[in-house]
Amino acid sequence: MSLPTVKVAAAHAASVYMNKAACVDKACAFIAEAAANGAELVVFPESFIPGFPVWAALWAPIYNHDWFKLMVENSVMIDGPEITAIRCAARRHGILVSLGFSEATPASVGCIWNSNVLISEQGTLLNHHRKLVPTFYEKMVWAPGDGHGLRVADTRIGKIGTLICGENTNPLAKYTLAAQGEQIHISAWPAIWPTRKPGGQNFDNLAANRIRAGAQCFEAKVFGILNAGFMDDSMIDLLSASGDAQAIEVLHNSPRAATQFLDPTGASIGDLLQNEEGLAYATFNLNDCVEPKQFHDIAGYYNRFDVFDLTIDRRRITPATFNDPVDSSRNRELPVLPDLD
Image (spheres, rainbow, N blue to C red):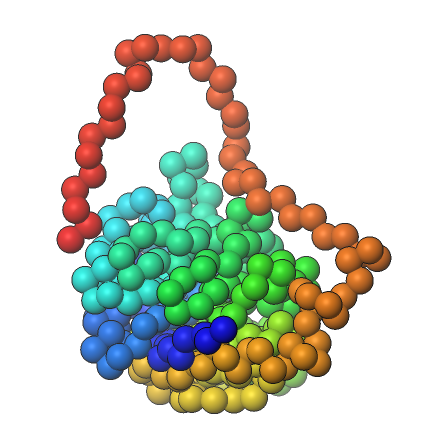
């Protein structure tokens, strides 16, 4: 059995903060650039559209109402024009795309999820995942997701799985992907994740991200794409507009996350970007996933399935179930959708 060798790209990119239309335009430009440079997959960070709600860490909830309304206004539907534009770009350039976005729902004007979508080179949706548990102050912004997106997509470049930020701390979520034959593990992260006021010991997300993603690479014997966002001056300026000196100090002194790649032993390969924006690249030879499984194959022989039993509920959770009476007037054909392009 011979597995493919693939070139992948990760956008260490700043969102056009709280501007969904401009974020889409920027993502499409990066998609075109990655494809032009020979990448077969390009990845975007957590909540790239419309940006990570770091304001939830800086101020108490009673001071964040306007920020929350702005975040909701710039969150997007999975079947809306923004995701459609990304699908068009993926198909136009013949490249797979993994995108983090804040997802809105027609069921509520105020409910949003921290979501990720994997799009094929034909522009089809391969997987749509909502973060299972918003982490720490994210709970004041995003609703909990469900198990529907805990899936590995079997693509022409390998079997791809994705977890969002703190989900990479959840061993059961990671094992769920490993048990589906995952070969490329995407982990999406924010640019910063402040936890302490100035003078305190802040959460070192550079080290924490590497440890968590590296554990999945080593344990599942997979290649890893750690894709972090980038905080640019315009984002800092918007968050500093209140003049809160302590918040400004947090923004400038919190550790910056890095975008990097790991092999199936957890070792670094390819490019690493931390303090500058751009596309990082790496080449994965998926045949390198095979030999380490001779040592430990947690989804194969290196487990005790008679001792451990894991069940995953992948139903999509909805707020209500409607049992309508049969209405023949509703049984007409839906209109044909236009071409994505």
